[in-house]
Image 1 (cartoon, rainbow, N blue to C red):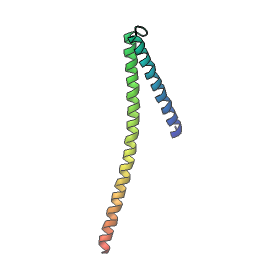
Image 2 (image 1 turned 90 degrees about the horizontal axis):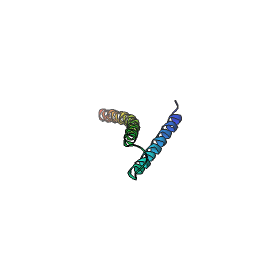
Image 3 (image 1 turned 60 degrees about the vertical axis):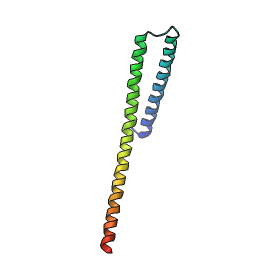
Image 4 (image 1 turned 90 degrees about the vertical axis):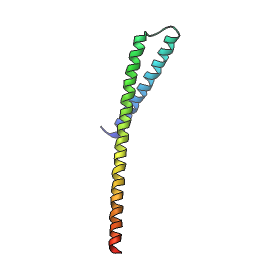
Amino acid sequence: MHKNKRDRLELSLYIVLALLGIYIAYQILRALAGGSWAIEDIILSLVIFNIGLTGALLRTSTGNKHDIRNMQRSFNSLARDFKEHRDNKKVHN
């Protein structure tokens, strides 16, 4: 899947998750006011919402780890090049 399509899919999933969170908050407020869902339904929806948030955080964390690995490789390459340059400079002096 192309990165652009994957980004759009990920964004749409985040939007659905946010809307679900808003709807659950609304139902909790209605339950506190004396009506709406049963407590079991609210707890189940909160568990599902928590699983969704955990998946989103893991997805973001995995992306960050990948970016950090790329940066680490770049810095290691830069350090290796600098050491070679420094060693070559010592040999010529």
